[in-house]
Image 1 (cartoon, rainbow, N blue to C red):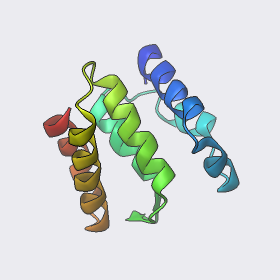
Image 2 (image 1 turned 135 degrees about the vertical axis):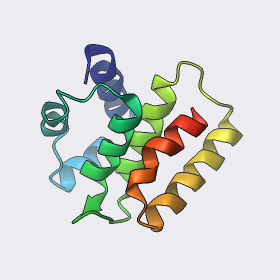
Image 3 (image 1 turned 45 degrees about the vertical axis):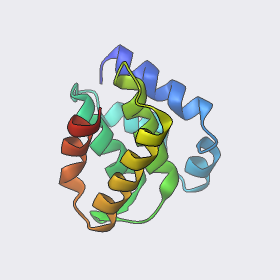
Length: 114
């Protein structure tokens, strides 16, 4: 995770209503950032945000704050965010991917949508 990605991620987490939910679940933003020091691909980071914050044993656990943070991070890193209606559609598609346990398809989702 480079400095730009780290700063964007921290900004998304700080500006979301989901930070408290992460803390309640015992999920550490710092631990996540530390674990991503070798990852510089934004699509891979989006996938890893979901894997870290919204899965248990490799399965989607329906913890939506992690998904919203990943989607907001994706939108922030895209440089030109899509219109709100397109973002909502993209979020629905992402949720379907996760409910079908296709976590490895998240990076592809990012590439297609952003």
